Amino acid sequence: EDLMIAIDYVKDNFFMLEQREDNGSIERILEMALDVVKKRGVKILVIDPFNMIDKDSRFDNMSSIAHILKSLINFAKKNDVLVFLVAHPTKPSETFGKSTPMPSLYSISGSADFKNMTYYGLVFHRTKGDALNLDYDINTCKVEKIKYRHLGKEGQVAFAFNTKNSRFIEL
Image (cartoon, rainbow, N blue to C red; front, side, top):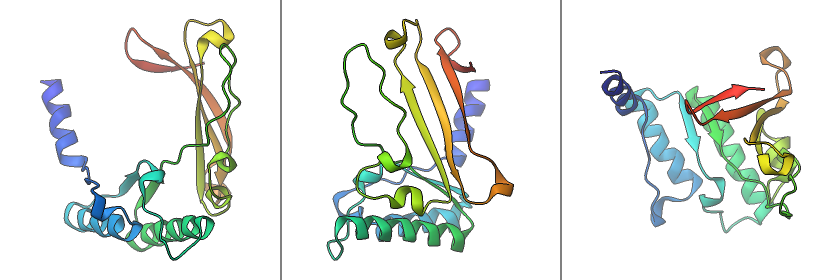
């Protein structure tokens, strides 16, 4: 019964917008998003991953990224929607058995605007347990940027994944 309640909740509250070759521009993505915002009352939009958004050929790479970020900011303000943009950092050079350093918003390839233009910046990082002689990985969530200080503060928290109950536990 609990499973069916959860499945019904997901069906009623999560909407996947399918990306095809002809709808990868930020304008098209936001047009599709606006449709579910208006028809279904969606208040949170997650775009994942950033690198699948088509860059506008009228702009160079940095200007194209700024255009995308401005479009998302304007959409969020106009429609009273919280927008999460998932953008992965450049790949660090990994050495077997060594942990990789915590990335920052400046680690995202293409533009410093990922830090400079964002209102809130979260960074997630996993340190492999074997690099630290642990049986589990350490997952860190870092709040790197808060535009409005009265709405939160910067900081970080570390978690481990409990494989027995499939939950994260704070370290």
